[in-house]
Length: 147
Image 1: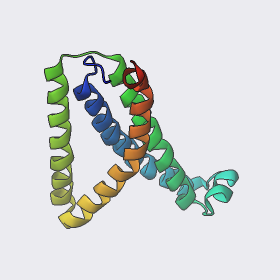
Image 2 (image 1 turned 30 degrees about the horizontal axis):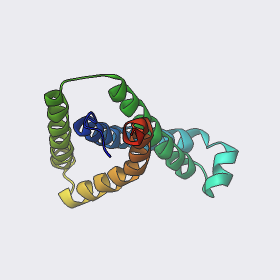
Image 3 (image 1 turned 180 degrees about the horizontal axis):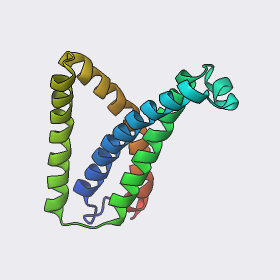
Image 4 (image 1 turned 90 degrees about the vertical axis):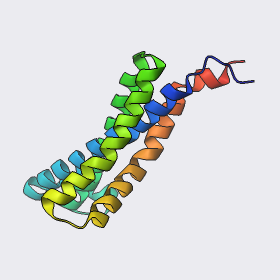
């Protein structure tokens, strides 16, 4: 039996914000990891772990780490705060609008085909989905396990 006190809008908001912030942190992680690995080389254990060298291994490792840290931080902060139900709905709508508008702006500024920007963004969003889903479900497990 599911309790009526579960705020599904808040849980959905945590999941969406986790995916979006995980994606943003993963992109910054990719860029900073590639920059660091290209200039200084990467750590030996990361090279051996990933089977790559230099900017490739640092970029991949920083992408994974950035996605995890971004998802974890944003979901944890949003889980600890409490807003009214309408505020969570506004956060969800604004986040989804930004996910659609920002790639359009990037594509027009860089003059890249829109398809390449959208496919890259969808790939990063997909990488952030599983950690966000796991973190959100772990933080809210007590709500679903109550009898």
